Figure 1 (tube, rainbow, N blue to C red):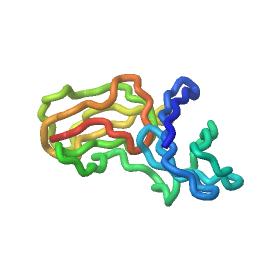
Figure 2: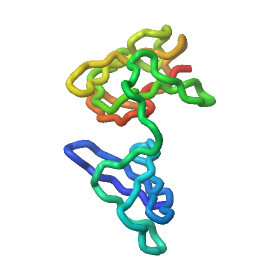
Figure 3: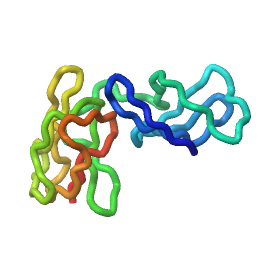
Figure 4: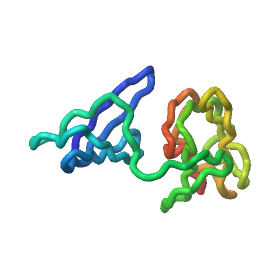
Length: 148
């Protein structure tokens, strides 16, 4: 397993190469898993090859239009994580750790494709951990806030 950090257009990306089978590389970019198909099989090496800077191709179907309502919760022993429904930049965080929130309440503002999107709480609870800061660039599926 190899880890790399890239800065592309001012955005920091942490790329972890899990393994390579034939011409398919299994990797994670900022915690989101991808399968990248290479033109030809990777040479047999003791270490994984360096990833290209080109955008990764995500395996499986992508949703036609992401929902920006309550984000899908992730299974966790300490509550659920509100995930980013699409890539963008955190413009504003409307809550603090320890705040009580209601389902549907706007907890942060995500700018994507020059539009501001309200990201809402997926359930009633208390804000546990805020995992992003104002100005951060996030990818689709990034954990934003934990609600306990």
